[in-house]
Length: 232
Ligand SMILES: C[S@@+](CC[C@H](N)C(=O)[O-])C[C@H]1O[C@@H](n2cnc3c(N)ncnc32)[C@H](O)[C@@H]1O
Image (cartoon, helix red, strand yellow):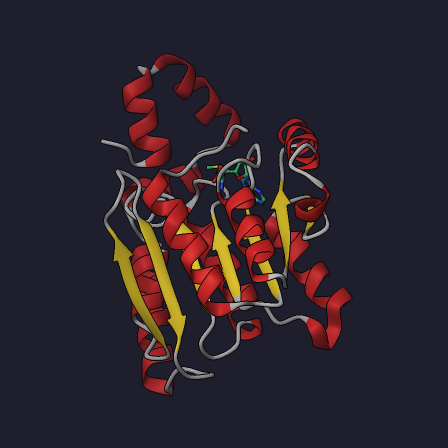
């Protein structure tokens, strides 16, 4: 089954699920299903407990992912609910529908490349992760995660590790207290506000989408990947 993440990243994710034995887990960005999605549900099945809600925003990819996971067997299918849509809209809806059961012991963020998206996803989900629970983010060394890592590290209620096991990098944040101190909350807000003033991201935010599309058509692929994903 097609999937991303290397073997070490897949193992780190599976190990956390095995260790935490969460009842509910959440993932943003399933892609075709054979990477993080399959490995989380396999670990849940090995635990004999738990369920994954996997969010995917691209229609064609979502359909392939649903078909792929269906082919993985009834036990794994029963541990998974695919959710179509953008994380920013879907996460609040899920939390509302689950009401008091909205508690996610393990969360994996691997959606869009805009660094503000992982921040928004973290802000939407952090109060629904119990103390001891873990949020992981992929592409921690690239554009996608370049704001999440310093932002979460500025909070004193998350213990953070950057796993340097791939070109992309895997970020881990474990909740150690329910809320950050007031001082660290303010510090994190100021870290984020200075990150948001980074010139390359400001240009991307201000330029109209049609202009960006035209520029992207004319630049070489390597440079395009450097700008959109932060790859070297
Ligand atoms: C890098 S891929 C995910 C790889 C996957 N985790 C794996 O291990 O194979 C990113 C996926 O996130 C999806 N995506 C991008 N922005 C999203 C968003 N805001 N909400 C949900 N999915 C999103 C993309 O369509 C894409 O399929």
